[in-house]
View 1 (cartoon, rainbow, N blue to C red):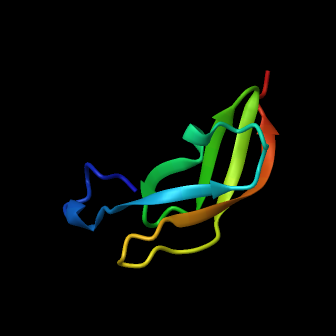
View 2 (tube, rainbow, N blue to C red):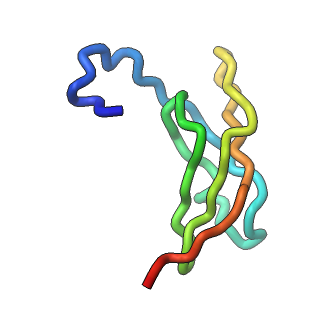
View 3 (cartoon, rainbow, N blue to C red):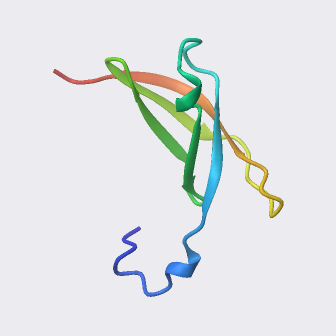
Length: 78
């Protein structure tokens, strides 16, 4: 979504996302993100690759964090 060309930016809403699963040594500061409420996937750079997470729950109006579960890892192409 191109926010600059979107005349109704009030529709843009960030929610707190919590990442579950993945490497046990993934730092805690990488396990919480703010994402658009419409995001379904998160790609987190870590060491020599990316950890991939997909949305497993949606937030309610009470501000409950969205849960994203680990789905796999890819390596950075050389």
